[in-house]
Image (cartoon, rainbow, N blue to C red; front, side, top):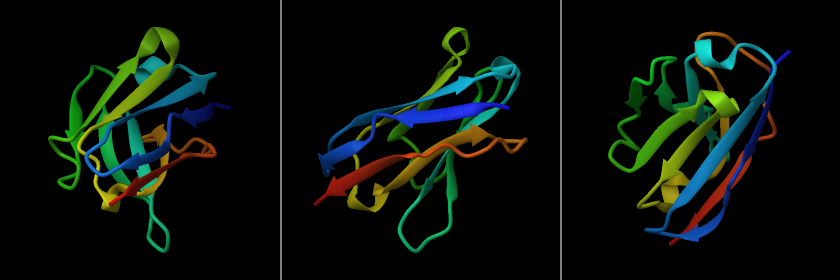
Length: 114
């Protein structure tokens, strides 16, 4: 069973930056494509960024050119650098594998004030 622990969220003003981290314990982390997801109040969880086992990345249009996903396989960790944050980025952010479904972590709250 893989355990996921997200961290790095907080309260920032619009235009600010945050770096999220997600540490995975157990499993063969390096072979899995990983993703960052977010869920805003009253909305469904959405996938915002993915990174393949080889390092290829993809982004939702809403975050393209502002967010950067990366991974450190030696540390079993995936990151999300978020720049130029907007109030609409406010959500709980989660990480998970993309093509398999591990148990969700507790997420990390990101709040962007206008």
